[in-house]
Image (tube, rainbow, N blue to C red):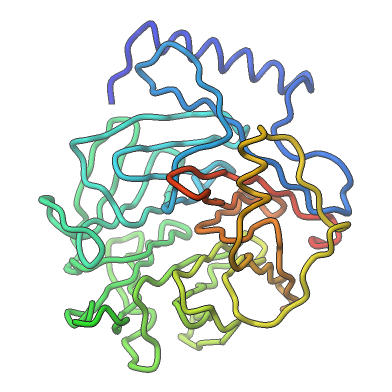
Length: 345
């Protein structure tokens, strides 16, 4: 994506100025306050397109259902033709529209500039060849990977190993019910392997994948969340709500899921919503629906009421995550949350 010289220079100067203010403590780049509280804050970012010379700071965005870590403490998100990259400092690194390239259903990052994208059925019809693509965002070059699978779903990346969901030809079934799938891996040398074979007792309409720092694979379907160890052993973690699942796993192995499991809910005195515009705070405060459930590595679970109706989430590191909270229309809030110190001890 090309940028105009004037627009690029202006945005660079704005980023330098904001970075200076961050370093000087003049602007908050993360929720601050009591380390024993869950601290939530609508994320403000520059939403101006790269060719636009002006700055457009906002904390109310469009609905982002596709979001992934950038592998270095920031995140990438995509919706239709719009792309957004927020770096580890909370600044807008990229914001552009791409009308020519495929529109992926799922993405995962190898690095802040290198993505893996799932294109085509069973989720999107597209004139582009279906399958897995490597995306160099610095040049906007899309290269189809040499895998046979053409019905690709969720993706996760760990140490250059790309893991993805491969749906069978039977999916989706005629009545839109879930179908069988295989979880495959593409290794650094280009070879492929099967991590989890198809099983009629494990069906999914749109599964989610995640890995922690150890490489343990997490899977969430409409009915359950489970892990798959290196030897293929499956361990049940939680029963889900039967709706589109949300799954995010921190490097240390803490998870955010849409679980139906009856768990304790945080009391009002255990969390705080700070900052944000009136509109952003209203979206968060009025959001209704099932909250995300935080599951510690030891298995302890607690529901987070400020994430009600979240449609996606991503961990930035072991102490911070982003939850996408939709409004009543096409708007949403990127809610940045810092977990209490007691949850990481």
